[in-house]
Length: 511
Image 1 (cartoon, rainbow, N blue to C red):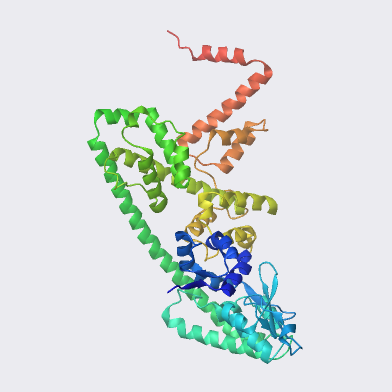
Image 2 (spheres, rainbow, N blue to C red):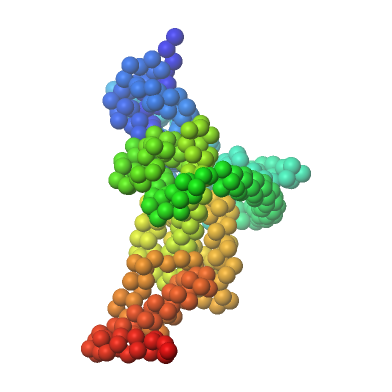
């Protein structure tokens, strides 16, 4: 028997709601929904992947979509004065004529639609149904009063409607949480049932104070849970490092003289570096193989590895963050170990660079709002940037102001990003903001550093502000920058040949 996955009303609801939702999977199936009002599991227009996607996620889409709408404050509902059904307006979802019209608005875009009471009950959130009942039965202005209340106390909807609020709250505090919920709901309901412009500040105060205390307890519990997770992750990383070291040691022990020569060659190291750099980009398999074909492979590797095997390794790294290639028994283990070590090192460096760039765009650099938004938009395009929810980028735009006002990094951000930003914040001076300094520098970055500047002193100061290399590398880099300016001065003064001649003479040793 065929099962209806989406009714016409559900289909129209998702199409109307989609502009406010950042759900790539829903956007992907939207063309199918536009062309076919009813979607069944036996519909021949569905591909296997689309059918599986709708079956798996349709309920989540509907629940998430229900939160995107609210009753229109200036006209939450109206009753058609005519007794003739022909004069009634049609519901935007079920298309049936309705006498009792509820006007709802999409929060993100401001689009208004008319829906009937049954569709409100089917498609809209608990919050809207609660307001619908009070508005219809007690106070036409309840929605406007609720908007005023939640603007002043934005935590109220969380207390009333977020079922998984404070998920880490210890069990011993759950009874008090229920007391806060029930007391807040009773107070808000009493406030909404009669028209008034006075907020119930005194009545809400004890519940909001208690909720703040509960939130602190939940945050402390969350911090402890994160510590446990970090310890587990660290143990897993330590174990992986030991396994990697063991694989590396085994590879070194087993390799032949020919293998040693191959691994020591510049062609081999260059090829590994190029392939590892490609793996860290997390491209699709087709794109990875297309770009892999442009990388010249050393002759000695032609019989050892092919594009299929490298594609398997790319898929494994994208999924697990490391390369073991357990299924590829004929691939030399030293090659797997070398590629795994190089790829993980480059991926860690990419991640650190991205963390540094995000911190500097949000906090470290003095930027205008437009410049900050541009830099964050660019960082969002990389693979690392796509792992972070879009809501975080909106908060990053004003993170610097929030930190200056004494607020912490938001606790609902991904733990890895929170930790990375906090580490850089901990290194800030007591006054002012300084950029996070990168632990490596490229030739192109050095060119940008010297461009338009005619003083080594100024460039050295900027270098120390932006970079912090290992001592030997830093000494080499600063020496090169200083020599660059000396050479430039000699060229401009037309004394370069004479200077070089004198230097050669000075370097000559006496017999």
